[in-house]
Length: 107
Image 1 (cartoon, rainbow, N blue to C red):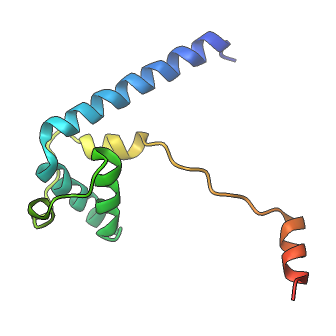
Image 2 (cartoon, helix red, strand yellow):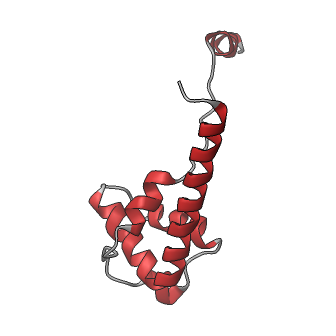
């Protein structure tokens, strides 16, 4: 079992690595990143809208029109894959049995 300090250190290392990946994506430029996101989405059978929202998550803005009309092309250093593996996902709300049964009784 890991002691609390070790978990904190591991979390800091993950945060630092995530920052490095984001810096690498910013250095690659928005056009290359959007092309890489499209390639990643098509390889995983995601819809192309996934690339749009992932771009917004990375850069904080919508892709520019000149960025949207690019051929899907993976980035050479696997930054997109590393970013996707380490991104924070929002927890889905859970609906308990009690809530479902009460909702079923409402006309």
